[in-house]
Length: 266
Length: 312
Image (cartoon, rainbow over all chains, first blue to last red; front, side):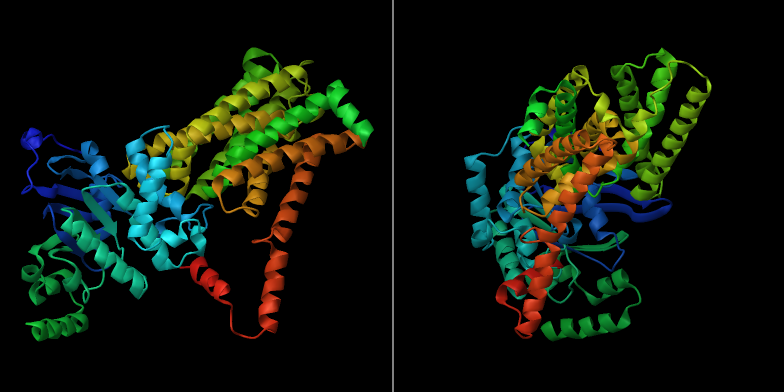
């Protein structure tokens, strides 16, 4: 990825500055562009949803921002500095399905991995790290499952373990890939509560989200994505039938239903 | 039995063979755990086959049959094979198993061709290179065992140092990368250590059977525990047990080759573990199913949690 040094990189930390600033980001798989010329500022302190149809490049966008997939062009800054300098301020929650849950480990050990970034190479986690991990498990209501082998947790419990691992990073910006996908009602509530707590503590949270119906209740900033950024801004202003129609193209039935719902809300 | 124990302690040949096989079992047991959990069970197979042309080239270039020279050649060729493998996976659309197959068969083909060429030269010195195909543990001498101990000890020390990083890489490489741990460098280091295990195994079990030494102990160990550290320890123990008991078995029976006997002993441990391990054994699984069927359609709460959690 090309990360250009920007002139204001040395500026003092400014709360009004965006948590994520993406410029001219293009990602291509072979010849096909997956993300095209993305320009995006996500303000600090927001709960942001990235929404778009399947294949819109939502996961790719956050992976490219985190340097996990190579970008053809563009730059990403986190809190007005190149991402490489800011890794410790970013907590990443991958999709739950991205790991093998039959791995021989328990919930506490997975959460402990969140402290590895600060520990750096070779140094091992000790009592202090274990206490942090336990606190984070407790925060997502999973303290009783600390010693449980991870394959013996339900999908929602596994998702909460992933969230606890991100909490253990003690980051300023949390980037989550579909945290609500396939979770039970208890977990969904736990995640929503957690997002609110994080926001109250001044953290920024960016979630890839797939459920249009729940999105207005959970988030206050919206990015509509379909290979390009179709619209971005404060949630209520951006979540309009016109913007959704442009983002989702021809899926009329879903859109008309949503339009009715939106009018019902108004 | 006591006679066997005395031989194990005092018979020069048996002691070397048993020690060398035990060292191989420990090193391949530890590294095989990571290979198995990364779903790279056949990586060791490809690396072992890739080592054969290295052995032949080392002999052709130096004219020496000294194990240290040949194993250096094997290590270099195995490492080149690894890098080629990573390159193919990275730069082409081929999946990892296809890349493994290509590297394995190409290198092995070149190796067998070179071996035939060397044999046909009628060089009085050539005899014995083909022992690396199936191993010749009975020919291990004290110097080999010391070489194994140094190589294996260094590999195990590195695993100990980087155990946190290797665990992270194995469980969740994307997360490891987001924390700033270079996953490419870590992968290369881990795979290079597997090359070391392969090099140790070439003299003992040979190119063809080496894969079993990497997969077997780890697969058996996974059956008995749900934690990584005990799994690694158990895998090393199974590897060492198979090594020593295989060496003893082949010592007591004339005409039993050591390498294959070690692998067969290991196979017995693997099958025993697959069938009878308490939580994951197939036998208990079948019994539980029958019990459940007999006691009616209502699953117990524990079973409910397990079935819900096993496939999200």
